[in-house]
Length: 422
Image (cartoon, rainbow, N blue to C red; front, top):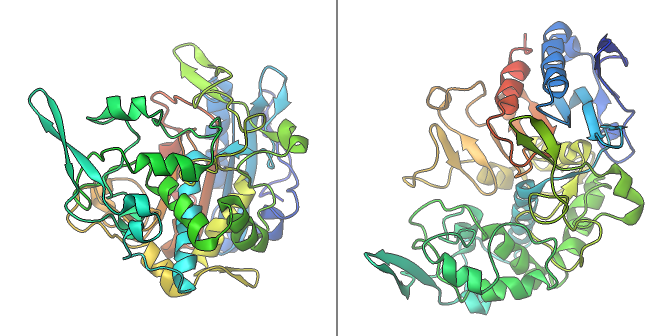
């Protein structure tokens, strides 16, 4: 499935395209760009630009998928999945999606609200008792004091990243380091997420609840909460209630052994081009295949394909339903995709909803898009967004950490929107 037949833009510019795997984007109908108000000629600019990043060795490889009006107009792969092995990137390559996990777990929480199992206004301590009373680190001239939180943290605080919990690197980082909880990478942890989260509750947050937008362990905490409320491991809830109904057959916390040759290699940007990242740690190849397989990180633990993730996003764009499978109600999707921050500072022109950033002022952000657009990305330089005004879904997958000053995601955005001609 693809916009164009397999072709070479030039001898040095071959674009690898794959017929999609079942349960992935294959379930989408393909369309010529002109049939959905886009220009094939203008989309070629996007494909050529991404290929140039590969040719210039600024990217090892990537996959981009674009749907409009529910039909795929682009699903293209560029460069190498594993450059050292001369293994080409393919449409069904599997990626570490890191923080793209957050939107899926946020969806699980809202599903539980729809079933009457919780309210997002509930205090987290109602389900995770260790969070009944939490503390905050308050700076002083020679260090910090630990004080009681002004109020209980709510589920909504976690969904909006206003609980005050960061990634253990704030003013009280020494306490978090001593507890062995820092950073977003959990794949190598030899303990269930519930145990890790229970230890978090004893450590001070960076700000008072509701005071600021602080990116951190919020959705990992919610993953543990889902396990308690649903009375099953997080992976089982997601698999039974989201992945299987939506046909997301290649989305996992830990990769099945038989799929390991489809996992993209992680690269790092250097002054001399991209180089293979080291084997261990968050910025390396990770423990997603050979690790302990015990920690289901709701904040950053999933692996997926562009096709699988596009199905999740198309469900959101459709108002909570895809191919006859209803995951959420239309009103819940509306609640998730509006700003919940109010006067809490976030980013120019943007607010934050329940799992997604939300565009509120196009001019203030200064990039192409539409008011009401929502999206996010992942630590390995992946990005996605949904534009309801244009009936558009864009998924961009690559594995590059750190990415340096690479501007490919901004180019992607500009070149997707310039191809809309209706």
